[in-house]
Image 1 (cartoon, one colour):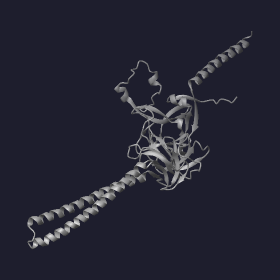
Image 2 (cartoon, rainbow, N blue to C red):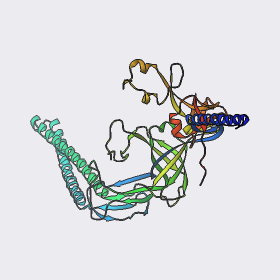
Image 3 (cartoon, rainbow, N blue to C red):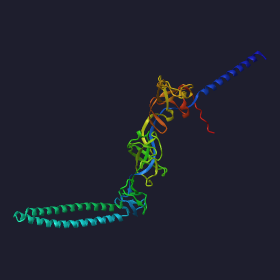
Length: 434
């Protein structure tokens, strides 16, 4: 083998070794980089929405209860009937109330007859007194006889006054009995539709004298409908009167109804508690989630809409145009130390031989948590704090910290959760469709 051939072989071997070393180094370098997805910041139109579920209800409805106790003798309407104010809806057995009324009428008539007799006696006593008064003036009647006649007149006057008071009492009793008798007839409290019929003829009801009178039916004004939703306590601060809402009804597929927020509850309600009965349907602690009742009045509700249908309302709480926006998942929370450096999110879990509970000194050394994004800077991910605004469906407003055209790390969510400041990054290779 010639010397020139040996030199060529040696050179080739050297290049092969060098290439292998470089290849291994490149592979190792790529493995040390974090695969990420990026996106350039642009201006967007954002709409912030609060979504909550509830059920359809009439704006005005009345639970019609019995005013007196007894069995229902006549039920004059059925569900779906249209009724007018004052129309008789049902009657309660009034046998006892009618008897009490007749008894009061008889007692009053008897008392009035007694009054007539007392008035006649009073007139006789008055005439007798006047006669004795003249005779007494002429000294024809003794003082003792005159005093006796005067006492008899006063007694008759007292009897008449007592009888008149008794008549007044009997008149009041009669009025009460007549009122009770009239209450055996159940009238419609308003114009509307019978949306729920809870009792049947022959069933007994409990009157309004009790704490829980029997509800016979519900009459509602279906011309104005609303959806009553329960909004999470974390979202209620963004909900205001007059805000627009888009309502979807489960039973009316594809139908969207415009609405407006018309009422916001002032008190929180523990999740699982009925707003009508006030009785909880699930157990919980003092830290359980709370909701606020919000009423959304519907505009031009469709004829097919019925009370108690399940519905979902999307309330538009804010709307902005042309704002700097970033994907929601790009905005992460990191802790900064006192020098403003980002604390490794995995450090507390990875550190060994550290106490389970941080000391007061350690806790004091921690700075506030800050929202921010990771900028793409010369092959590295650098954390930059930002201030955020309204939240859209997939993007969030960046009020401060970014400008249009900035390139940030946008994914994946799993990567962003543990991404370190100044980590070396590479663009994630998209998988080809098979």
